[in-house]
Amino acid sequence: MIELIGVEKHYRLRNGGRRIVLDHIDAVFPKGKNVGILGLNGSGKSTLMRIIAGSERPNAGRVRKTVTVSWPLGFAPSFSGNLSGAENLRFVSRIYDRDIDEVTEFVRDFAELGRYMDEPINSYSSGMRAKLAFGLSMAMDFQVYLVDETLSVGDAAFQAKCKRVFEERAARSNLIIASHHHSVMQDYCDSAGVLDNGDLVMFDTLESAQDYYNDLIAKRAA
Image (cartoon, rainbow, N blue to C red; front, side):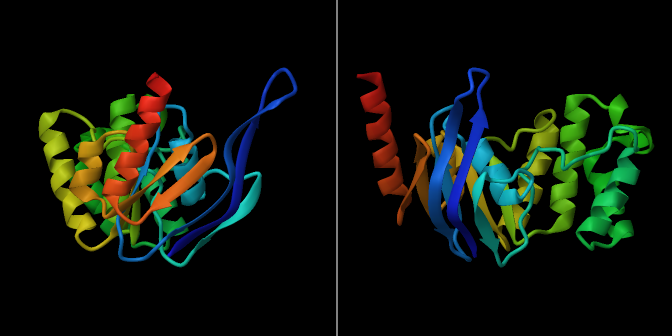
């Protein structure tokens, strides 16, 4: 289970004010369910995902977790630019108490980076970093995977491989998916919440969340 308890996140503005992204949110993501987070662009979905992952701290409140949680897929988990891909894998494996050789072997085969696995991350393109990060996420075998907007990494053939491996993981893990695309939610989620103006409204069904979200879009367009 993942529980958000009074989570607040704001950012300071140059004029001395602040922009509130998450406004004292309380929410529960139960074990055994795949949950979507719907929200317009700029609503704070990525911020919420980083806070759930633990890669960003809230200004107030806390996140209680009784499961292992991934970083948002495609997000490089604090890779050190001066270290090689393989050295970063060893570092992250130690942090998460995973077998270094197993993780390295999986990612070398999956990411298709060849000799660049032994080159500094600073020499990587953004696509190469994304491949390494996605492969590392799949190698860790988390109980909950966080997906922020997209599973698209690399060319069409690599994306197909990502989808196959991701669906294998999804069959035995839970998902929290942040998106504004209904089709993505339909494919994977059991229920969803809607993030708007700093508030997260949770619904028991995906259909109820989608109806609320569509009403929100209609009101904004009026």
